[in-house]
Image 1: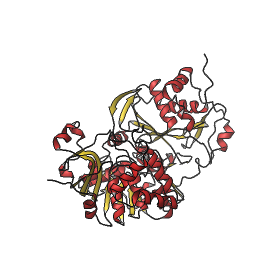
Image 2: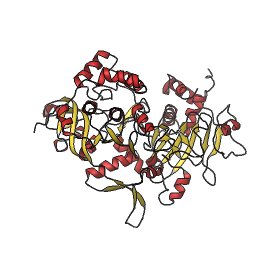
Image 3: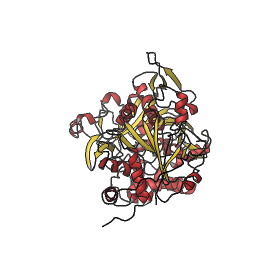
Image 4: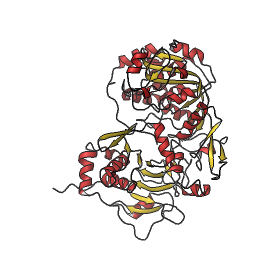
Length: 296
Length: 244
């Protein structure tokens, strides 16, 4: 019943070449402590399925990624993710570029153990050109409409980050949006939930309305307490995005020497070292950023 | 007191607002500063039923919260068709094909951009408009490098019934308003902003635009609209970040 694990325990269950889904959206509520742990462990050849943000960027920069499956990779307040961008321009990674709704549908199909789900999105667009394996399907009913047959996106592992969880793997978000974290778990064989705080089940239940208990223990195999573990992405209301740090990240990513310095300062040690370096850096973490760069 | 002359940015806010006129209880999807101001202006004036989110998961009417719409629900709205987005475009061609994915060969782009985002699903499911803050031949091109959002030629090639929800209503730029009210649904100059000549717009467009014999001027903001924009919606002047 007790599913509490360490970051090292989780990474120990992951293997190079796996398909890993990552929750959150853009630069919001990303399981960054887990992502940093994967980078440190030096896994390679991963297929990463994500509404992409700096999770994708860090994994690409660390050489962990063979293929990205996504509708976008963005830092929200900084439109373009610099590492992803560079890797694409260098031809260093493969890409499955989907409409955002197709990605949702692929996860939903996997969660429902279906081979595909029909969707209108993608018809007539170059998403079908750049994914030649995608097929359309004709409705067997009188309408005869042709739709995209979005294939299931089954995951070897899912990584998500929530505000609160109990030791059994029940978890809740406290911010405004669940994103697709429950669906990532339902689409995956192994499911890992990092959280700001592990609390007793009573406290978890009392922390908000029941419908915000996004994942339950059927959907989670491991619980990892990682305070500030979504940093530098947002994890409202616990903290907003660390915009100053994100700018530092994006600036450093644009130059190899700067990036080497950034890595040495923040990424070469373990998660405790990272958090200590972030604290030592100081800066304003209190401001919850206003809305910007929503979905398109 | 007569308010100061409207700026170009303020003309653009009103031109964007006009895109949502008549939409009623539809979800507006503005993806940049000036379209967002336009949608908020429309909601406060001639289109009070328009539905707006804060860019995250909260629905807001004027200054008050009125509902919840997380991303998963936005996809339901997309599929239901009760949405009118105004997206950006890194490239746009004469039929309204839009590219926000990458520049150059997709397999190894010279410039990786956002990715297709929701553009394929938006354009096949509901009304779409575009906002281009810098009208130039770099954006208005003969052929886009990747079709993220589909234009009228792609929709026509799909035929019925797949194309039945496709509509590109307007393209608003810092110079003009354009639409697709031509027999072959190619782009037409609908109006030029005050102070802009037709020749300037033609010059800034990388394909042959349809230009009617008489091109009207984009309407000016009313005094009430100007007051709303300046005092209520954008007192910090964020609109000048997109258009000076």
